[in-house]
Length: 390
Ligand code: IFM
Image 1 (cartoon, rainbow, N blue to C red):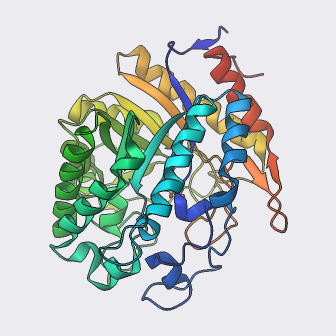
Image 2 (image 1 turned 120 degrees about the vertical axis):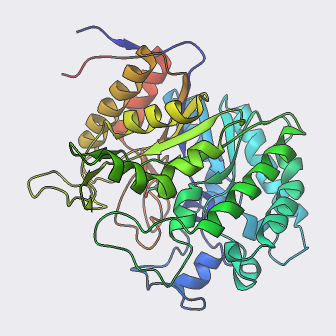
């Protein structure tokens, strides 16, 4: 079998989010929840120092660049930049600007996410996304971040707004399979906030998009209308709202099969990852195709990966996912990049057990331990081609 080739200029990278890797994000709502100071389900462990990437980002980025990748997606942390309403920390803006500059110095194109799940405590206490003022508050923060974004081509306004919406109402518990529906007024506010942010960041010449958690809703025969209805508030409304953006971020990990009564359990004999999700590498192809059908925008895969302790399986998964990406491109979809989740093992929202990283680290010394999967993906990136399995 021949190599699968990817076009020149394709972005090859890895992604992180501030709260999951930086450590000590003490002014964020997540930190406060982890310590029982704000309402929320108890966590297995708090984020603590995380990977200390707040201080070690130059080393992290260098590992990615040395491996052969040409892009790094990271988020700027609202809770650090505006720890109290109206106070914008110049020191934190400088910090994130240094991250952008470091990426460029290393030959990595930065993709900067403005919001990745966490909010400042003051924002959460004032009602978070459950209040109309959220849109203005977010837009004001985005204005404040502009010095960081000077010269940054790709800006992701909000990561997985669909997950923000389905998780917005603390009174709604998680079903054992599937997701709760999106909360309509939260969805509307997130869309409004996104559109404001798009206008603001376009003003400094960046290309704007947002990244959607696609779930590969696969209907059983006869359940097509059930899947369409199920997917609307959880995914499709957000893909449609991307229309008019410069690009869209598609993220996928697994699939959800839909029967006549809704989501079906994962089959007993299916392989599961450390998050308990079905091992299903082609999911990203489903997500890309759904996005393309709904908005026709250029796609960047902004997250895709697997929680596993078996790095060989990470390579298998990534190979399968890239095959699915390449198949969509062969069918004419405009896919422009693949950014793996994640650059580092990180805080998976309550636990450090699900390890998604291309790079591990020693929990006592933070010494970085690049995994073979980093070398593998870097080699694909250098060659712009993926060899057949075996
Ligand atoms: O870790 C998360 C990330 O923060 C958002 N997308 C899914 C990842 C894996 O669950």
